[in-house]
Amino acid sequence: MTIASSNFDDTVEYPIDQHSLAKLQDPHLTTEGFQRIYHQLTWPPKEIQRRY
Image 1: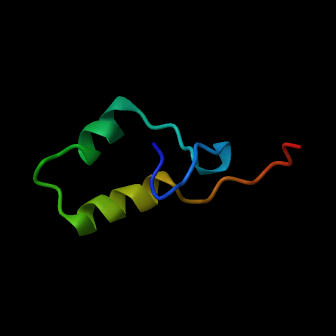
Image 2: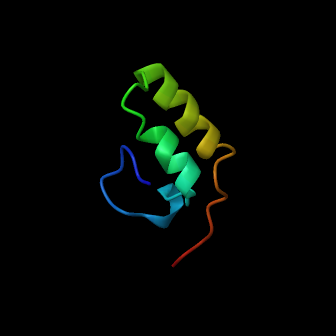
């Protein structure tokens, strides 16, 4: 999933499983609830590897 990114850079991509995706797609999910789940899925930040 990529959010708030202008491109698909591998430093901002995080794999998620079907269960996590279903939680994010819940139509009753509030903005705060979405942010809480998103934070859990993307923390700690991935270590940036030199790519060039």
